[in-house]
Image (cartoon, rainbow, N blue to C red; front, side, top):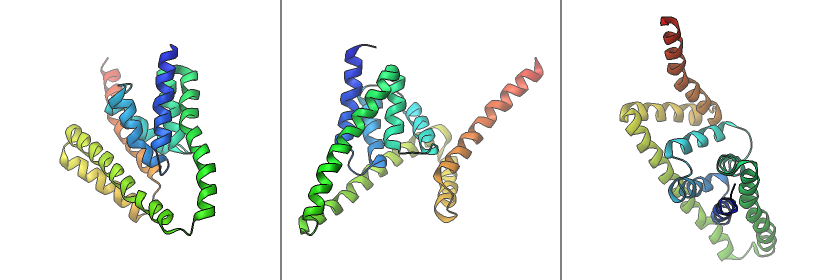
Length: 189
């Protein structure tokens, strides 16, 4: 793997680590921007698949996605490179900012600054959700997309089912027509 490619991986995920205020979920739109739009390392559909699988696995999404994408683009070194690039800014910032925050937590503008980030992250997640809903609409149509979103919402928010279980069930359901097609093709041959 060329050093320039490893450099692109490092600086892309370093930028995500530096700008991803709010944790893993707030980083998802930044990862999408870097991986799909800026570098073209994945398509929107591939990114959606990685996001779905990453949500079903245990652990923080902020390291799972960079790890997989880094491996896919740059092998084992790319995986290490991407994960280190995304976590180093968080570690340094956490040490510095938590020290400052604990010292000045009663200052009004510090409190207001932390509260001001909530709407920004909310808008970023809303934009990503809208993009995925639009892609789902194009692939499945409005009816199926809205029914799936509604059922997922009921299962997650009202029944309290873990989102990973819902995503896993949807992945299994999506694979069933593929296995039926293989079985019927093998039966006719």
